[in-house]
Image 1: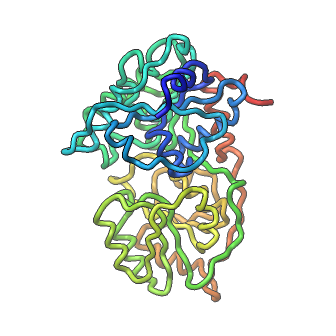
Image 2 (image 1 turned 135 degrees about the vertical axis):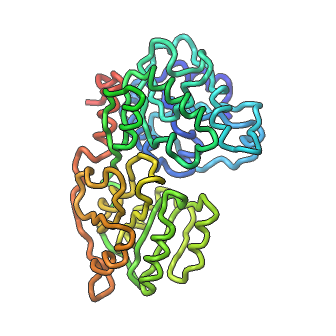
Length: 385
């Protein structure tokens, strides 16, 4: 936990406040791999000489902040963090309620920072006390939407509070940006017909199209393993291709998905730090997006699609919202029942699926996304020449 003096300095003089979905601890632990992390990296780089970005983490309970191991790694260039703690204790009956309770413990913002703009991903920040609320006062605020939390299964128990947070945030934000068609629809339902569609992207320079795949044909998935995935479709595909290796890199969020470990041609790697993902993708033949379509979609865009293609992987995906509007080649969209035959069609006689080098359009890079956000924040004049 930073000293009072360091926290005051971080709050007093930044060019930008950033309120990520979780906080600095998670950003470091994962390697800035999420949309908020990628944008914080670029904005920190751009604003480093003008005060940088202060990352205001979602407050943590004191009891867990002192027992959890701090992640190893350097903060993104041009960023500082404020890691608030609180004596409040999570409700053991419903961990999701911490999203609501933690908002009451965001640190107060000094009057001297009243004109510093804010970029917000956690809508519950709109329910913080006035002195700590990034939406209060004259500052310019951009609300950037990650997923539609009114549809996300993880937030079912606090749906009323989610609705309240969104209503407040949408009512006060100067600009709303959305990562996909589903989140743009969420904004419009709240009267924000001015929502800016800003899909996800990637940093192409991080990836290499070289194949280092060996052994059986390897189909890979990188991401959280939970109810967003079509478990029945995955198991059907895995069973239909017993000679193919299926590798899942990511934490298992829901217990029922542990059944994947029982398939002899499935490997669960657990969570993989983002620094290791480019090398991991070189060992795949096909990038896979076996997501549910419809009820279990959460409205957001899928970052891994861009990263698979930046690594030259052919991609097989279900028809998730917006999949055809990303400007990417090399993506085959098919019903889950057809994924086994599609994967088989991509594989040559040597057991390898040839790489499909394809340029990531400039508008699909995080560099370009950060430029759009800088303009929305009114900070384009601070962009390095």
